[in-house]
Image 1: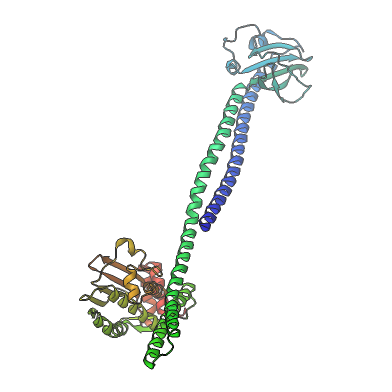
Image 2: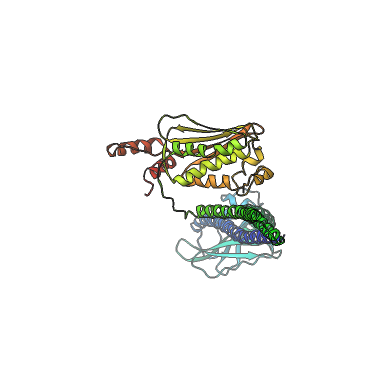
Length: 473
């Protein structure tokens, strides 16, 4: 329970940390987008104002004569009293958002066209270059304008031209954008938080499963180690309670203790072997091994065990030439032996176990087939787990520890091979081992041979063949 609480707290920390980081990133990105939109609108607005002001400025300056005086031509361009619906030479100022003003040298309004803001001050410094101003009227509405100096054809200073635009539509658009960002960020944070919780669960799932496997492995190992220890302790305690022991009774007690010690020593040796193979620290000692001899010797050794359980054990070699691989003979013998013993344990009396040796292209195949109880589909993915038993009562009765198939898989993987199982309940199982064969070629043919293999085989398969041919490379 404490471990579950620890994993839950860790998951919350991961999810909250990820959500905070993503929230900060989204906030910064939202602010950047907001500023980019403002900048883009502002640049577009100023380009529009500058274009309108430039057109008017060039048109008006050619018609100015005396400073402060407004002749009929400029007055027609900027009618102060005519209705706004009249078509103008600069149509933009009649779109409802623009205004144009002419100011004389004392900054008094001479003419005006377009929008007429209420109570809006029009500051205009004595500028020689175009200047920009952002103003507010009495209602708080904002305006943006450009002021340009006007000169008569004889280069005398006449006054100023001001072209402005209401920012009401831009402010409304930005207010909506602010609202979207302010509402969108919490919603995005909720989505990020949920996603973070889900992703943290996915990230911790392998760790949690690994922890559970270690926890289960520790419990199973403790149970398996406790069984022979408890049996030995019970035997010793029984012997101590008997004051007079005959020679035969002493021999029986010592024999029981010896069997339990052997079982304990074998279990510890198996655990150490698996641990070393996991860390890849087992000295391999590769050399050429003949699978024909290994299969025949294994079948011959376990004939007595099969006969004692009324099971037929036989071998079948489907190839006429020796099948050689580069490996460790002791481990390969242990591999075949474990599968044979496992098949005998789960085959009822009157059944049969057949070991078949075959080849497929560049691989050797070993099939161990039985007519036993079979393996349920839900158990097939776990039969190679350590201490896992399909039938605990049967395997414990026969002295199995649940490590045989785990050791077999580790040996196969150490020899760059694979192991698969096919099974059907009440009909039996077949374990198939696939091991890469040794490549033997004259030196003159090796280069062309490996060149052809490299061109036609996947790189993983090619690498496996090269490692088998040069095991120490």
